[in-house]
Image 1: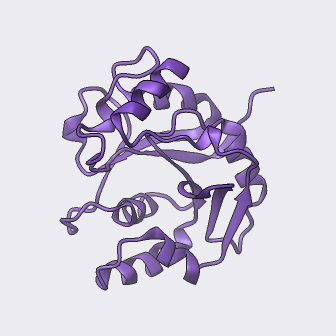
Image 2: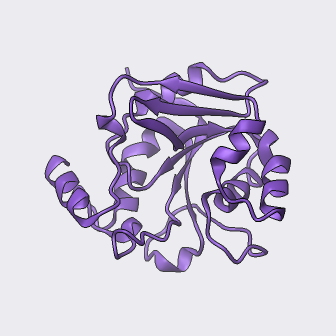
Length: 192
């Protein structure tokens, strides 16, 4: 039976990609012109709706539901993107970094099964680390994020310490492989 999660899913595609040397969201992948389009096609059947978070949608030459960063913030950071996303929804949202093409939807199913009304954030963890951009976030975090940003704090981890956060562990690091460097991208293309 196909996994379906009754929440919006947002692909985080606004990063600087400084280690890659080029915008990861625009790299070709898995037979698609861009990694972003690959993720959209892969994830769309499994969520209530699907969206792309970005600083500016102008970098993309295809149609999608884009959520641009709030224009009052000049910086780029995952926290600004997260606030911009949560301003758009009254329900919790699933977020996934564009550069993690192998995370199965079953990971989000497990996160969703642990969601309750008191939870602000549910974060996937694997043996090597926690994955703040493979997570579910609730709109209840908006005030905490706005306060953090007003103090020039841009790390999601800082918010999680003050929030009602659950960490859900997964046994293997492998599905969480992300592509930060050109060699990691080449290796991922061979796997796709």
